[in-house]
Length: 305
Ligand code: AMP
Ligand code: MG
Image 1 (cartoon, protein in one colour):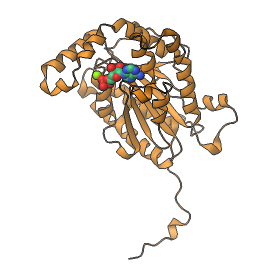
Image 2: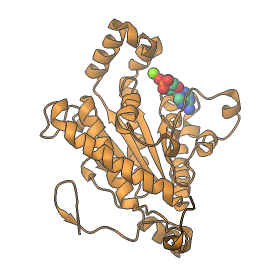
Image 3: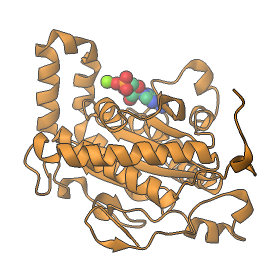
Image 4: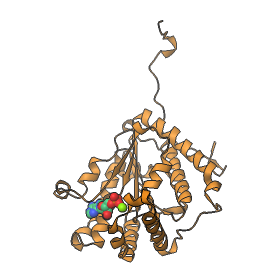
């Protein structure tokens, strides 16, 4: 028995390491065997209909400040580093982390704080911006599928396929009858990845409108943050309620057993980092990556002078 972060005993699931030789007989069985993830506090369960207004972006459990979480965050980062190394060595499965948030929501900060110290060779970050002409000439999932993780990798999507039911919906970039079909397409896409040994977790970093105002103002005041300021963010802010409705739909329609959404209280950056780090560490642990066995007969090998 191993202990979880609360010191409680938990039985390590042995049946979750996906690889071809162990592929279960049916699709539903394989999906059932997807890692069961810990830190369920912020997970949106399949079929659950959350309201963002009911989730307090200021929440931080018992923690009061950055210092309170310092040691715990380090512990979670160490777990991620260790498990990521195993995943990379194993070369059988991969992890896709999707990060979505309103402007200033903290996607970049989350990446730099949570993945600090991870071996860059086994980790990729792909930001998705306004699609190019070539990307727009393909099906909307094309550019995301191309950047999905290969075996052994942890891949982070900084924005993702969800932009095509968020900004695209809010700004009417395609007709409603087009974006309406995309939730199902996204679920199918993620299911395909899951069936091919990719574990997917999705985070919505939930900040309040007042917190966004503070962050935009602080970007304006600090010349070293001017590069982060975009007057477009101010324009998008006017659509806040429409974005909240679009996020609610995305989260409620697309939180599945194989690709759950987590709505993370993100007004306090240090708490957000802790929740994301702990959820990623728990997810990697449930994937149970193993160092592959060495060659036969290593004990007889002598390295010549
Ligand atoms: P940033 O992440 O702040 O550098 O901004 C990237 C911008 O690209 C944001 O305004 C997004 O809304 C926009 N964007 C990302 N994906 C899409 C998409 N599929 N269609 C339209 N705009 C997008
Ligand atoms: Mg921006």
